[in-house]
Length: 231
Image (cartoon, rainbow, N blue to C red):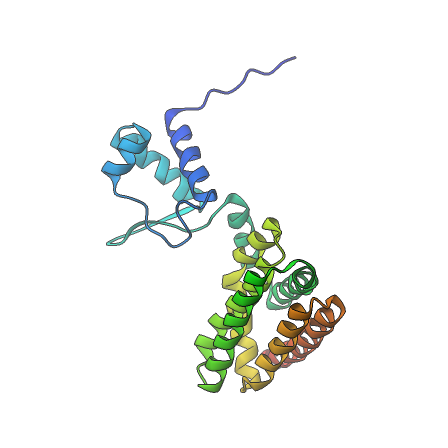
């Protein structure tokens, strides 16, 4: 028996259009949506229809509405929402294992595929990591550390890789912060990054893997220290 195709309501159509625009990058995560009159004109709908569509996307986790701020983009896709919910239920070990697995594969692919523009971006992020480490600015270093790894992931030219890594950024910051609190020093961290940058510059996949393996070992050792301290 052939099922009848479900006809979408006007609210559902507007919600889908907003979602498509977000996934296309027109409105980035953290950015504020245009004012209601502009959106009403854009989608050619009434205020009530627009508000219902936005409420549906807020409920789904794609948008966030806060008093005095307005409506902002919370996630760039339904995939991001699903991952965020899964990460929230996962422990630090699981999150770190996924992060390091992604970084290992990304390092190898980046070494194979990086362009000169990619290399320049990676080098700029590395320099900022080193600067933050020397200035002993842990929070700034964490931000630059993630920016460095994201620049490596971007050099894979694999869009799914890039999106997956972007979606777990918040959890990455938490895991790095826990590890940094145990290490107490930033010096070892950017030395490993320098090795990884050099491997990518030389397009040496084996050296890239070796560099990440060294980073993984340090991260795991620090993680066990964190977990033991909590017991």
